[in-house]
Image (cartoon, rainbow, N blue to C red; front, side, top):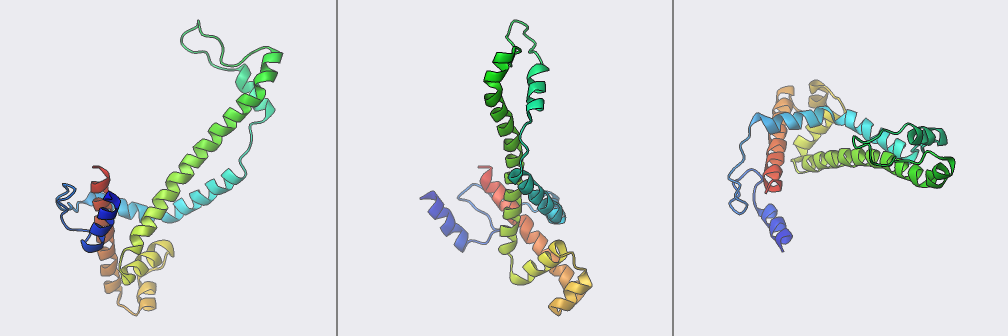
Length: 191
């Protein structure tokens, strides 16, 4: 029910207006959100590379080798409480019996860390692309051409049949609108 009401609300309300329903009065368009948007746009290509790198590493995740596992089990650190038993067995039969369990646990932890970072980067990228998709067509084109395709102002102006000044003004309007979108969502998500 709340989700339906929120969707209905978003359809009929400009993003940058005051929202009494959520107790969020206006959006203070300070430099915080504008700087965040600029950072996200300027680091987009780098984060795309990181996503591809992590995707590759997840597909070709290296398993813990027997040597690495034996070393981990042999050179374990003791807890501050010396009365506790060792984390891994030190005798050969104990090592053999726990090998598979410990190897699976270590491999799971390594993949879990990669997956966590991969998921966070994908979420951040998808959110940015979704917000860009909410801009008007001209603003979308300017943002994509400048930040994603690395085109100069004159190249963008020529391809869009605009003056460079109009392109820069459109960019600023798009940045302001993106900052408003992030500020609005941040205000809603903090509730």
